[in-house]
Structures are given as C-alpha cells and as structure tokens.
Length: 232
Image (cartoon, rainbow, N blue to C red; front, top):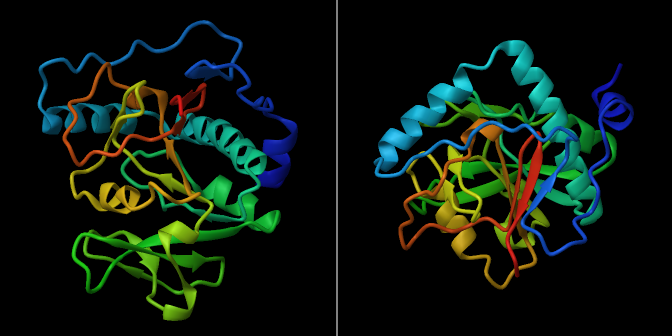
C-alpha cells in the first residue's frame, strides 16, 4: 500500500482549528505524556534530555508516530493551499519526514530542502528536492541537495517552512541544536506570507523553554496528537 493511500484512508483527518484555542487535540484519548519539566535546566541539558527521549523510541513507534504526524501535516499543507514547501531530512530520532515528502510528490506539491549557505555564514538556502536530486553530505554529515543556482528558492518565496527542532513549549518557543540557522531564516520572514511550522514528537514538549532575544517562536507546531497555534 502506498504511503499516500495509507495516510488518506487509515488515519483520522485533522479538522481546521475554528476556535480561538491554542491546542487542537487530534486523538480522542484524554491521556497525554506528562510535559517535561525543564525548570532551572540549562539549554544544553534540555537538549541532551529530549534527544535521549526521542532516540529511546523503538523503530515501530517511530514509524507509527511519523505516519500519524505526517497525516496531520499533510492536512495543514492542503488547508493552506501551499504549493512550495521546505522540509528537512530526519536524523537523531526526529519524526521521519520521508512519508510526508513522498506524499507531497504524489499530489504535485514542490518540496525543498535546506542547504548551508556557502558564502553567508550561519544562513540557509533552500533548493528544490525530488527523487532525482543529486545529494551531498554537508559539514554535519547530513545529506543536502548539491548546490545548483537554478534550483534555489528564497525563504520568502516559500509557502511553508517545516522546521526541525529539539524542544518546544506551548507558547511556540522552539529550541534547535544551537546553530541558529533557522532563527536567522525565520527572523527575515516577519513581512512574508511564509508559514513556519514545527514538526516534533510529543515527548519533545517542555514546560517552559528559556528564551533568548534571537529565538523566533513558531505560529504552528504539529505533533502526532496535537496542533499548537499562537494567537495572531
């Protein structure tokens, strides 16, 4: 069975968030994992704990949770009519983005991946990505499209940027790996139509993250069980 068919037929459809609430619950269960209390912890300690949590999930749990979360993300993309969507290739226990990428290819949505800018330190480019894209390893050992100026899309031209993250809280605060790549990218989108969406396991939610002036909160965060939105 194809990923698209599985996601269409076997997972519940996410409904549009029509009420002024911050959290939409996808599942009918009222039981959710306890939110990780990170009070008085350093940023590095928070990262270390949550990375251990998500890497402790079994392969079967990772597959199931990734498919469920992908179905909700697909619904978000379709509801916003996004046609140019940047994602990322998963590693280190992140939700697997392969299902959603392949589903988007099947419905004709153009996908892009981040590439470390070769000249502007600490910044990202986004390059078109499909099944025929030539890939290379970057300085972190992560696969990214081979640089081709004809395939570049600026962040402001994208309809949606799905961002990786290590931790988040219910205020939309995001903690990455510490490189600041996405914070720099998102800081330039305040007057753009581009929607930034976090994509994470439920176990990556923390009680209240320590925030620095350069941290950019996310308007939408999607997990396998919930959709967090911030009031406009």
